[in-house]
Length: 376
Ligand code: UD1
Image (cartoon, rainbow, N blue to C red):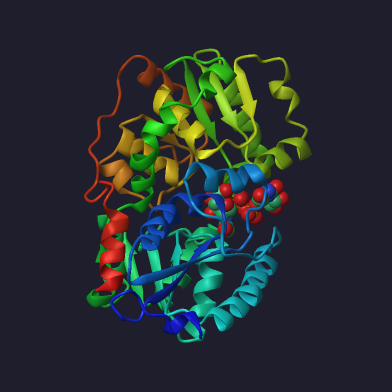
C-alpha cells in the first residue's frame, strides 16, 4: 500500500510531507521542523537532500550537529551554473514526487533547491509550503532574490519570519489567508543547540579567547567573485587584524576565488588571521557567541547575531532582513570602504555598540507553530 494512505493509530490518514534541503543554510531551518514532524502522530515526513552542497563540511556535519536523521533520499545534483543546477534538481526531484506522492512539499530559504523543488511540486498539483517567505532585498542581481520571488508567487502557504515579510507579500497582492507570521525557525535551532555549542573546544583548537577576535564569513558573489572588491576585503582584514585577531572559515566559492586571484599570499605570514575550512554548526555557534563582533555577508548570521545581541557588520548593499537593522544589532555597510569598516570596528572595540531587541516570534517556538498550522 502506498504510504499516502497509511493511517495513524487513531485511524486517520497521515499527512505525507516532503521536506527539502539542498545547501548549507537550509539545514538549520529544516532540522527543527523535520524533527518535530517525526514526533507528530498525524504527519509522515520524508527528507530529500538535493545535493546542491555536498562536501562533508558543507553538509554532513550539519546533520550530525543538528541531530537530523540521514535524508530518505539524496539526489547528488552537485554544483553547476544556475540553469544547470536548477534544472538538474527539477529533473531528479520530479521523479521523487511522482514516486512518493506526498500531500505537501515544504521548502525553506532562498537557494536554488528552494525554487527548483517549488516549481516541480506546484506543477504536479502538490500543495507547497515556503518557510522564510516574503523577505525581499529588491535587488535582482542577487540570485537569492529571484529564487524568493519565484517561490512566493506560486507556493500555496507562506510562512513569514519577520514583519517586513508580511508587508512585502501584502504589497505584492498575496491573499492574507495564505500568509502566516510564525517567526524565525533558524532561531529554534540556535536555542535548541546553544548549550551543546558551549561544549565545543574550537576556541582552544584555534588559540583564541573570549572577545579577542572578529569572526568573518564572506561568500556572496558580489563580494568574492569580483577581483577589486576581493582585494579591498583582504586589505581591510589585514588592517582589522592589527586590532583584533580574525577567525575566517573560508567558503569553497571564496577559496576558489582567492586562489584564482592569487590573493592567498596576503594571509601567508599573518598569524593574527586564522583561516579555517568551513566549520560545523556547533563550532560556529560557539565562535559567534564568544566573538567581539562579526563581519559577514551572510543572511542567516545577520539574524543569529540579532538574537544573541552580538555586533554584526554586514558587507552588502542591502538586506532582505531589515528587522536585524531596525530592531537588531546589525549594521549595513553598503559600500566596501576600508576606512568606514575600520571606524565601525573601532566603535565596537571602544564600547560604542548598537543595542538591539529580538523580533517577534524569534523565540524557539516557530517549528511548533508551523506544524500546528499544517496539521490544522
Ligand atoms: C549557495 C546559495 C546561497 C547561500 C550559500 C551558502 C544559491 C543560488 N546560492 O551559494 O544563497 O548563501 O549557498 O553556502 O542557491 N562548492 C564546493 N562544495 C560544496 C558546495 C559548493 O566546493 O559542497 C563550490 C562549488 O565549486 C561551487 C561553489 O562552491 O561552484 C559555489 O557553490 P554554489 O552552491 O553554487 O553556491 P554558493 O556560493 O555556495
